[in-house]
Image (cartoon, rainbow, N blue to C red; front, side, top):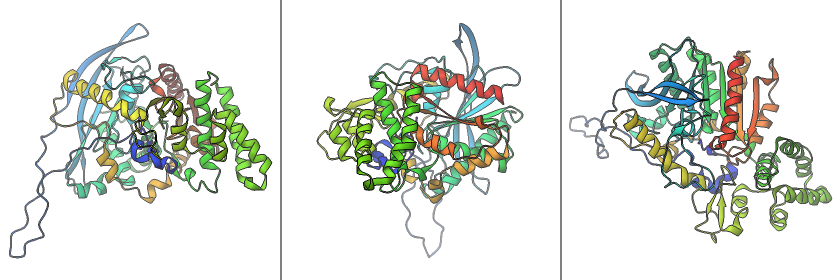
Length: 514
């Protein structure tokens, strides 16, 4: 997922009412971190009493490998799966944490390598691994999927492994990755915007050096808050560590937080979400097509935005807009009327399936669950997708790592970590977004290509935000070097096989260009 940032998860303010529940797509379980601290110094003047020391955690094992095979287009694809760790050091060179990576490599010359990150902050990379681009896939995250369904790893026809090696990175506090310093040092070293970018960039650099892959063509894919990380890591690698990427894929990225502010004055927050709400309705009506959505985009950035800006100075236009929004969204006319044509995300997710007693997910409002608190003034239940996806992904990953690959670890696996999210420093650098670094990286490398991909239905990181962001960027050479593509589905549109296959096709075309 997610970055299932969603990333707002990634964390736009407009879903703030459900953020404490759903912002999580990237964070769910607590992760026990920390190591024992040194004993107090001796002497008459004793220091203040410290908290009880935490027991040292068992060491993480050395790398483990497994030879595997899948079938693609009727032909076998043999590969090596490797689970191992890369140490993260503080400024004095002491090991401060250990990042676990899962790599899939295929024998052959001139193979590209792609690094993958999810978001949160607090999400492991299992979402992209078993959900989207890894050689194996599980069914989870779609309407009707149950967390107690039998977990079965299947060959993934949408994998990227036939045209690039894959390295999935679990940031500190996610998956099996962990900090080896006390909690009071973790925010400074790992859980702030700049520190996060710097150590993850160094992990990529170190993996390339350790595996003799610096000469390879290099790519990065980040989802949700991983999409926020993407441009910043790209530019940091490029300008600070001397590693230039060939291409970047940003999946449902949390790029530009400043778009989603001042909803009392600015039309932007409402322009961001109306197209995704409309797309979900069109899908339920079996009317969702790229042509229909282009009309929605044109209306949103044209007449809709102008009407919002005119406000009560043009009452006739307001009434016309409310009628149009009602038709586009299929919502109750009274609900739209009293919303002023400005559909608040949290209210919408409770309203759209209310007659069935269900809630829509912020990640795809056509994925639902029953509302256990239907009469509460605000949503109290967890997000429908989050509630159903953590168990199957965790089961699949732990079994794969420990049994299939044989990386025997005595630790808890965190697909989503609430602790990471709790400790995260939401500083000014976070609120600034990562569009400046996107522009800088593209300007510095005339061949770098960036593919931004979204699901139509996603309300956590709506596609319209990326459309508006890219359209405001200057054209730097080939205008297709930075492109936005949309697919049926939501934040994790890749859980739908047809969208996953379409993503694969678009990414293969990008690789062929550079």
